[in-house]
Length: 270
Image (cartoon, rainbow, N blue to C red):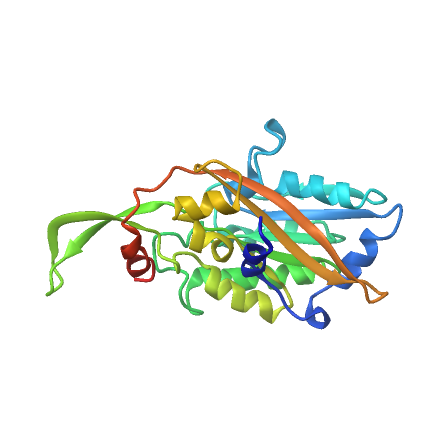
């Protein structure tokens, strides 16, 4: 993936305020250390666990971490559950995370937030649950670095048109998922409050995904496959910038019924 897309997708923070990322970078550089990674999220994070390797973006990420840090060993605890949002994790599943975790991955921006307006206010219960989850994870695993991964549903949706007075008409159309159609905006604000960087699949790909020519120009993959590299960085104790978080997520998607290109911005942004 071109660096410009990676830069758009990485919503980082100054190294001084990143929670425990310096510690994680030092541990990755320590021969013989064991790094425990914990993953929370929905189906794209859960995959098929042991039944089908590489069915989740977490699997190639772990392979990349092992390849980049051969002197360290890694263990993965995947606590993701398909079809669930953050509320169950904030209530129960956070207790299953090891207290000595080193890196915690959090992906909850689609489930419960896609196709509705349930994640567009700090007063929304699902947004409150997201903050509750982060706070409980920080308390349970105080030495862990965290990374929020903001997924996005790149599909089309049906829409019933309304007349100028508001009532629905008999006309229907297909439009793209709006740019704001996830919990990412408020999740990012909360994550940054606690020193957690965000990797945004939406911001990395939104401008190119719905344009076949642009998409194929920046990635060698077919039209029905999206390749996302999620990149994070930290600075170790010697002051060296240390880029270590480089995972490839390949997600098969059905191509949406696209609008003419001159109409996409209008319907994407409401």
